Amino acid sequence: MHPNSTSATVRPLTASLWRHHDFRQLWMGDTVSVFGNQFVLFAMPLMAVQLLHADAFEMGILAALESAAFLLVSLPAGAWVDRSRKKIVIVLGDLLRAVLLLTLPLAWLLSSLTLPHLYLVAALVGVITVLFDVANQSYLPELVDGDQIADGNGKLQATQQTAAAVGPSAASALVSWIGSPLTIVVTSVCMALSSLFVSRIHHREEAAGPQVRRPMAAEIREGLRFVLGHPLLRRIVACTGTANLASSAIFALFVLYTLRTLDLSEITLGIVMSASAVGGIIGAITASRVQRRVGEGRAIPLAAVLSGAALLSIPLASTLPAVPTLVIGGFLISWAVVIYNITQVSFRQRLCPKPLLGRMNASVRFLVWGPMPVGAFLGGTIGNFLGIVPTLWIFAVLAVFAALPVLFSPLLTMRDLPRELDALAEASHS
Image (tube, rainbow, N blue to C red; front, side, top):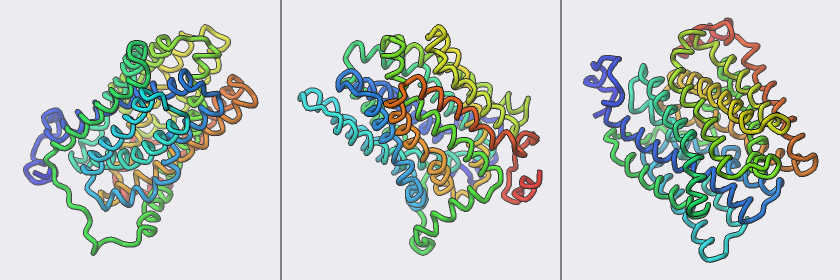
């Protein structure tokens, strides 16, 4: 039954989403998928550093290829997702990524693993991830009522941050036990399970018929026009895109920095990443409370300032005690980023007309994730010439300045964010 049909809307708004069958399947699929993703995010850079002896430039290339698809194919992906059944995109996306990732441990077992192979898998998985993420983020508003979107995002974010907290430690233990290539096998199993859960969702979508389709270029422009034409969304994407460029440069070098410059072990690295990610769990749990206390609008610039400032802890760890500095800084980064994301994602999901959701999300991904491969490439390139620590300082300072578009904006004076498109003019004059 459609969740927005009459029988669905008579449920009290306080009814728990845990009693919503389709949301539970989406949540379970997302849970095993994000846990698997944590394993591969930990294991793939370790494969490059430890097995293939990659340097700073090569690590920058790897990180750039992982996110290059967000710059190259996000916009057509949004239009394509809006024309497709999102459930099918999600299920096939998980299965295809599982198959591609399995080629890495297979090549390792055959003693034929190379950096170009790793690069190719990273790039192809990135392309599929673009389609998967756009469909996944556009699917929640199809399954639940509008007033439950923020609650659903909070639950999904809580799970994602739990995975971010538990995943690196579990991944480091697996890597120590079975090695990084076989750890990627676990990721493939997780993604296969995710596709199984999502396939059990009852909600039936109807793809847009050919009679309502227009040229893809026109549909892409419509998504970009919606995002860039909204005065608040325009500032949010400027902040997020700049912050993502800076943080991608930093995290492209992070494994190399911690293992070689700070001389931490892979186990210690996993513990640091897990302990830092606890902030994200707390952020997901406290997001609604923070929004009520400081205001939904003000939560965005305040979280942006805090997350940018906390990134300074990463280069500071080269002069201060490394582990506590990284843990405290990482905790604050995770907490602030989750508050920021829950607030702005829920805002744009409820504001956007449903037929435009895929293109809106894809346009946002293009604008805010497109800078990520650029940042990763710049981080690796500059790190190769100036050294890792000076490069980390450059991009950590840039992350601080990334908050300016939302800090000097109407958001700082707005307690409540607009809920309807006709609030555009009101928002622009606030």
